[in-house]
Length: 158
Image (spheres, one colour):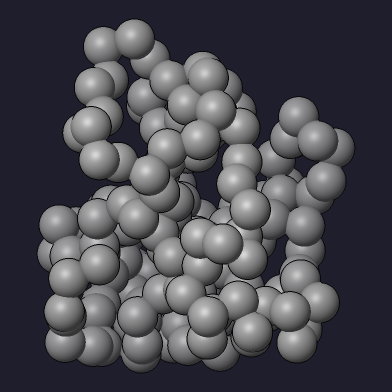
């Protein structure tokens, strides 16, 4: 990740939901799994994994809706009640970590993916850079996460 100034702000398409990321995320995933493709209507989803207490709601708390997953673990998707845009998700109902959709940031270029996951189902026309950190399924978090982020996650047991 490049050096950025925080906070970063974002929101939905209609402007009803507004939020602020007060710090950098722990990691940014680009997920190429079929569920992300179907649920996002795109070739992949780009999610900034961040501690929930570092996301401030500035206007209109998003509405929760539950979505199916291949693993069977709960997936709560948080959307604008007016325009339906998904601004973040909580995978596994952990309530301490959010997966913020980077495309909803006011500057969607601000957070590039650190890692590509589930590339086994990547669309064939999506070409990754030769030096991209990419995994067919998932990865060893202890090896890929920054030490301070990994320590936080281990301490919470998530």
